[in-house]
Image (tube, helix red, strand yellow):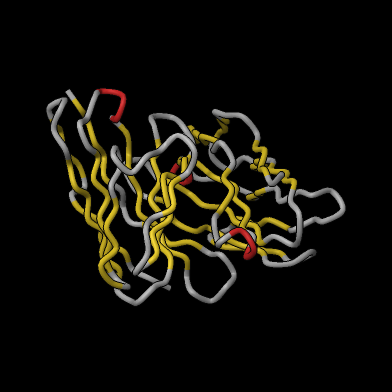
Length: 115
Length: 113
């Protein structure tokens, strides 16, 4: 299993500003995933972040809006840039457990409100 | 393509009632199947999983059986409690999909005392 610490747990931000969310894992993992969960909705994958390579973004998400860093095997950041109220969501960091059976572990999420 | 279809919510039950939340999937290959739970204000936690056909996952009184013939993974509990109120997500995982999980829409469960 993996224990994931995500911060901040919540924030209220002004439109036009940027917020960087940090995700720290207690073990080395190859793949980290960033999700968005809009109010009352399911999870939408933003991107997959592998150490040492560019993040892979899903359709509808671009690097300029959601830049991701993955400097090592235990840490990643997601930045939500030039925020608007439509970016108000829960952002979740997730890792695959490394055993090949695709089980995922999640951080507690970052609840972002843009005003 | 790969997809997960979940019973629409909210599902409202009285305490001690029997719970079923339906989940069906389409997948190429041989997926693993998961139920995750999200309690109010919290992140997602794995509730149970099954990695091959006919496996039964179980945890905290919840059960789900991987049925390949009906492509289903329905979540059941014999007697629900108020503390089970949460959103439940069914998901499938394919190792040939870069370990991404495919998520159902989520089912909100409300248990009344």
